[in-house]
Image (cartoon, rainbow, N blue to C red):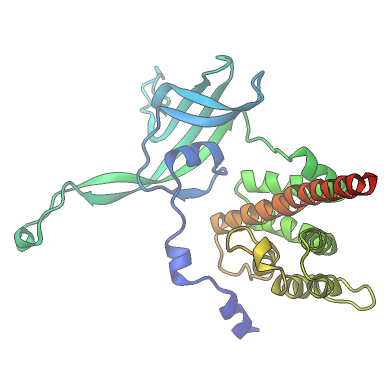
Length: 308
């Protein structure tokens, strides 16, 4: 058991060098109460964000006021907490919706003021300045939206959608471990459907029938097979010409759902939940739509050829 856990632990580089978000990504997508690393956090003058008002689309939002320490307007003589600040943006299109984000400055890194040639560096101490890199979102209004695309919601079904929604609530609240747990449950419940959609997609693109049969063999109902094993089998024969770039969606899902969560941070778990969500959207929304379009095209061509 100890050996298996050691194998599942993330590498030192993976835990010590998490992905650094841009300031815009932090403001618009970061969950609450999770320390996020940025290259250098400076409040941007403009961001792209979904307007839930009359726009109902992603629009440009402009800075209403610069970062302001909370309590800076207090009159009782208590100094404001300079590490907790708020910032607000206004939708440029409708001019009605406002996004307010409250964040905390967590940590800074010392960066050299300028690059000094190596020939001058001996005995010369390069001056540095503190640069804000670690921040935490502690509040947002309106609250982060739980958006499930209509096609995805229809294809997942009522039970899976409820789990999906709970996963996103946990994700937005900074509970990455819980979010991954819900996503893994959906994968477990939907494994057979995932493989069938992928097999139908391969069939629609005239992949060899032997390959399609191997994919469908993973969901053989005559014997019990763990869902991780099913994904591994189907992913191993997923046609290379149908991959998204070099990404095999079924293999990617297998690696994520079978990866141990021991030692992973909340932020790392959130990243995994986001990746699983991306694969679900691709398979249950994009692939199914393409299969339907391709079959309609083939049927139309066949009808036209018979009518000649």
